[in-house]
Length: 385
Ligand SMILES: *Cc1c(COP(=O)(O)O)cnc(C)c1O
Image 1 (cartoon, rainbow, N blue to C red):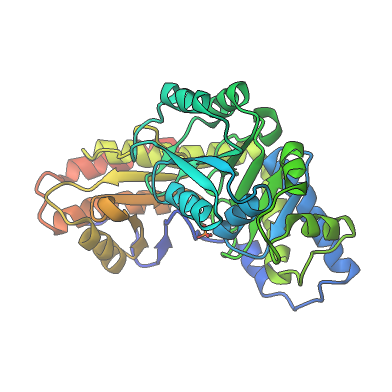
Image 2 (cartoon, rainbow, N blue to C red):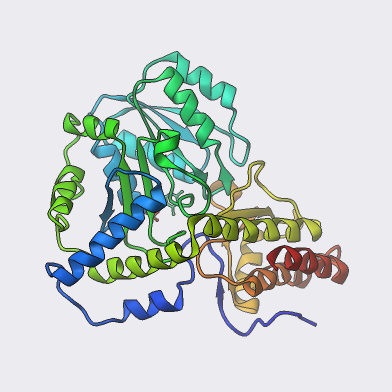
């Protein structure tokens, strides 16, 4: 006898995520032109509030592309072909940095951190001592394994041993976990609209440190559309380099206003609480959390070995109407990922836990008793209060 309501669809992916009512309303407002005082005021408020989210005094640029476009822009705007770079590879998105670096003719080495494991800081330090890199690239949260990296410590080690840039993909980190760009000395930070910003896909947000802007002035990789210097110069005149994504930027201003009203600390606490409730609920069901260093933005749980994770995921979606994500590559069918960002309610989280428990039973997992499901819901419910 299900306890939760499974009649409405619930989106619990690590991006895209459910939007707020106000954001959805703003998305249907009549179109305005991007070169108007009305739109310029919206842009100005977004730029200011993004600096607040990134905790930087440097400009945060809004690019009409997805998160990966933001990653690419940071790379192409700070480096030259042949530059030596180090890429932390701990999952699919680390691999993306690496492939991108190869495409642009960088001399890319990996620091391989086993998927789902705690990053080995001593090993990372050794690598940083081995030679000079023009830049080091990493994820803050490797979304594919739901693993959070110790960025503050990594940035401090980088500063001790390297003169180049320390660049982070913070696409599932900004708005989820503390990441004060200036205080921690990050040289490039990338975020994307469909994750913690709780907007549709289609915008990337990018900030460079003073050092990274200096590197920009002599970076030799060709660029045309995603030229950050041109974008910045246009912003200084209250405009964007090319046509603005009016609808998305207007929705961004609404989302940022909501975050402002809530406060950054409260936003981070809320996400943290959702992650904690999910983890404790899963553990109470006798399941194992996949990552040794779990992220607040997304949780990966190991699928019981008797079950096929891909079938389980599809069944949860069709039978219980909850969208979770599976694993990729060698994790395909082995993990399920629960997103904690965006406009999700305590009920969504409880429903996702119960659905997983019931689905395990639907596939014949005898271990998954009523008591276990009940205790998961109680544990999670207490945390979510
Ligand atoms: C989602 C995500 C991306 C990719 O963003 P797109 O918007 O799909 O281009 C990159 N890095 C991380 C860590 C992500 O979670």
